[in-house]
Length: 201
Image 1 (cartoon, one colour):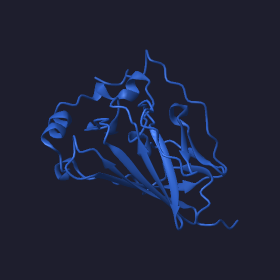
Image 2: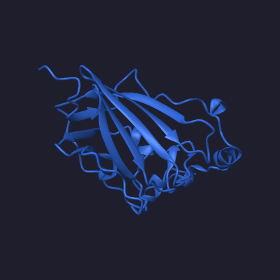
Image 3: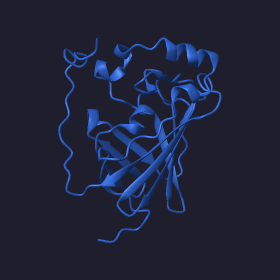
Image 4: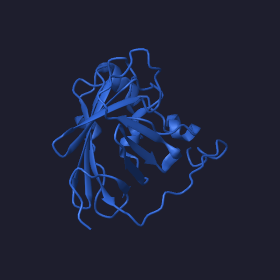
């Protein structure tokens, strides 16, 4: 089957051998003083997903579970298996309202730059991290995330820049890729609070 490079609809898997997530080593991250203190004081049990909170944005960008992308005229839906997370990427030119409440997924607007989908997300909650090793995220009103998705055959390439001047002197960057998996299913995912952090010591 032949697809257009700007047709990213379908189910995309992350967990396939030989390809992982591109993260800078912590030693090369350009922390602010506050960001370094937050990173150094992180404990594994502080991971919000261990409280049955969905990964949100920016953490959910590199979530290893499959996602389904649904393209509509006015929006693109990102449907995540993990925690049933749903993102609406508004494509109709709207601007995020100033009084929009902060949340784990924030408020996302997008546009196409040729064959690349560009998403800007604002209004994100401070109850989140950039990465599960404790890379902090402030949720400051001036923080935002830029994502770029482009298709090359059955591969969906993505990269993201986390702009959070409270914690990072320069944007924190991640990248990765997903494999088009039309025969894969999105399964039920449940998080039981009594067991969510059972493996953390």
